Image (cartoon, rainbow, N blue to C red; front, side, top):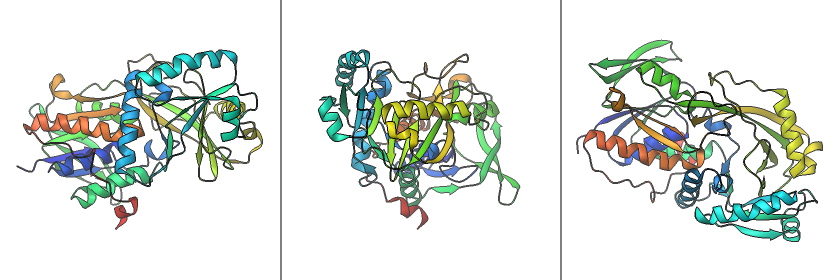
Length: 386
């Protein structure tokens, strides 16, 4: 087939997965990232491979996406995950009663969910709150937030993709109503130049609204930061969740010799200015210690924030009301050809996001090329630097 040139903007997990997919489909691929790869939201999440259980009751579309991609990633990225499962624990009678709706919703979404007694919970995780009433075990897992996407980058790079870091898109060039090039600034030399292409893909997550503004299209993205807190000590081996509707400080993710408590949620206009509110840090300690009391006295390691790219209308308050699903926008619908946006979603669903995007790109290019990323095993993360 003719080798079309796809220019991808954004060097996070989604951009990496899109580069991998399009490279396998025979495209010439150039990926542009204004900083280092994974230096945005991707490198700052808590490293949870979602089972989808967290969203099963209120956001079934996201839940189904998560469990499907969870199983695919286990196959194509062996060795990248600690397959430790997740445990949703009930600390009140109301939460225990909610377990019936929760388990039913999980099963409807195809998520294995097993009820555990108080004794079974404490046998598995002796550090959880001794007042626990019962729990539900689901197939959550943990990963390294940087190494997982690096496997996509490595495979794309060895497949012929060009990855340009410290290269920021500062403008778009149009020919008529079609995007024909991007103008970029090389931050290592401070020089600007243009890169032409046949199709341009924004995979910039919480920054996709800003990129859309440059092109003159509307991307309904609401950057939603969340604070995470790491304490020293592996206080649990499973991922511990509170058995209630998704809320603040209701998850503890074991990461090597640390425990990461997350997360809060609010909405901002500028994803480069998130802040780190002290009351949110205090909230993580408070709610985290309700799950595992040792959190309160564990030595502090770090606190940080990251912006989720949530799709939704302006006016959202905390971001909790917005879906965690993803969407690929073909901006030909707004009169701009040659430009698409993929946004929303989660680190767990990045491969599926890339497949959906590549399908749109192929349709626009008039190509019928099969996706192979469901079965193509990724190179190890170290191959990115080889």
